[in-house]
Length: 297
Length: 241
Image 1 (tube, helix red, strand yellow):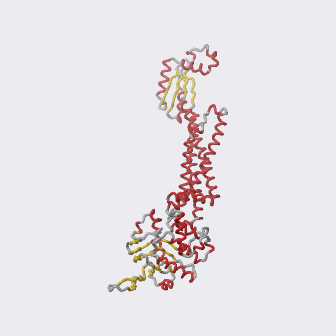
Image 2 (cartoon, chains in turn yellow, red):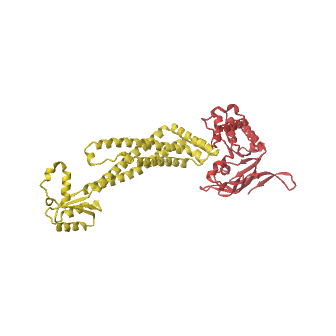
Image 3 (cartoon, each protein chain N blue to C red):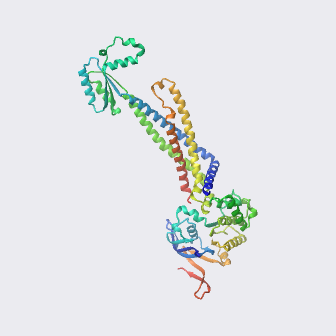
């Protein structure tokens, strides 16, 4: 019964602290709100880039079209030459017949285009997957100079661009998490310090009359938790709103045909957990620091 | 039950800044005793009180309260330990926005006591200090003496075994000082051990109670009533170097 009373006391005092310190609470909540919005946006950007990279990586990085004049023997030789390159992880041979069938399928509404086409008119292709896309350009230039190669299509540059972009977004996210995290934590801690200082006399008396550590510290931890949860909750809602608006817009344009924007529901749970962890970490750590320095029970 | 409630045996307190506040202090206080702790500023009175309130630990020696070695009282047990000690300060330390009743009740609320028990105990404590009629007043509307009586009621409300009063008359005029001392004496008559730290030597002498006198961290005089080998009460004065 005592513990229940103490728990309700902590909640009551926590909310009284909040009411007395409204301006600083507002400032702390705002900083957490903005910080998590930025971090959340970067997280979503990173997630989408990852998804685009996955899409790109699911297809072959390089497609090599052989000359139509190449004999089977010459084609085998060329395949061997490509295969032995260190960067090649997988090579798939597409026969002339398969290429013809694929073209017919692609231009299914204009079948008459291929009426006179025979297998011999088409070429053999190699779909090549690479271990290291970063070294892809070197591979492409080497293959282009090989005898029997007609043309080379590759997604190497696009993959490289998105890989670089992903790396920078990830670096940016880490910097934002550290920088904005520290800023949010410090401001929350300072806000609670103000309450601690305002209630110093009361806390001093509490100490002498035998108030337990939980009884003295509880309300401040509640206050920190409230700041963290409110800031992160509002931030989550705004991230969700803005993301859905952008996703709907992109999907309605031509870009949407090329880039698949991941639906928010795919990561809403993960993001919510991250925001919740951030809220508890910022709120509880911030208040613990403020208390540790100013309340010695 | 042991008669001795507080015992210091060669207690030393050396602060990190090099100040040697207590230099091997030894004394005993019996349960239900009224003792004055005297000495000039810097003599070690505050350190001794801090050790008793478990705010500081001795650097050496043994400090025992009610059979407990204070050095071994763990952090989480300190609040419970302090509930057995009522504390009265020179500056009253009342919460200005709380009424007299609320100020006294505050000391019980932290123990998680029910409202019914709090009401009963607070009313009893206020009645003992003669302030039942001022229960709904704010401290600012009370005289210094009355404010100190509220502080005494707050110290009493959790039914402590010991009351420590640190310069309780320091901010009071002679008349109110005498009143507070009589109040503490009255409380002592209920069996509560009372320790009063004070500069006011005359006040202590007038009351004819035992005095523990500190000078430069040493026990200078140790006045103690005890039976001699013939069974007669004698007042002994021990001088420590």
